[in-house]
Length: 99
Image (cartoon, rainbow, N blue to C red; front, side):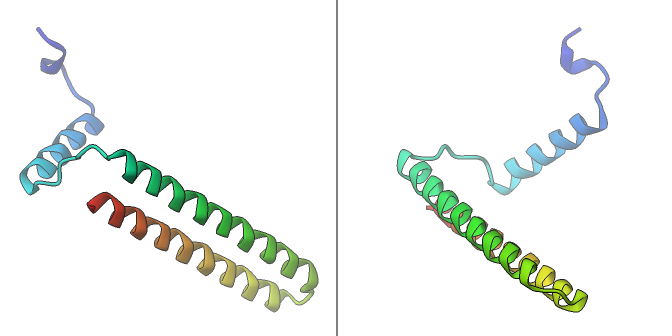
């Protein structure tokens, strides 16, 4: 009896289904070129630096704010900025992966 014949966990079953769906839809993984890897690394470094900049500015603004409503507004703005940066980063990486 091989390992594939034994009982499988729910995770293994789900992963098999996802691999099958990917194969049927043609969304198989293609290896990245060296240029793509370098471009993705640059994008990640850029957005990591932007996130650090936003973090520093946020911490500075938090120290100056005394009002709880102002703090809540700053936290919401910081959360939106981080989501925007992450979204932009992910879309640029996806664009690079597509070629």
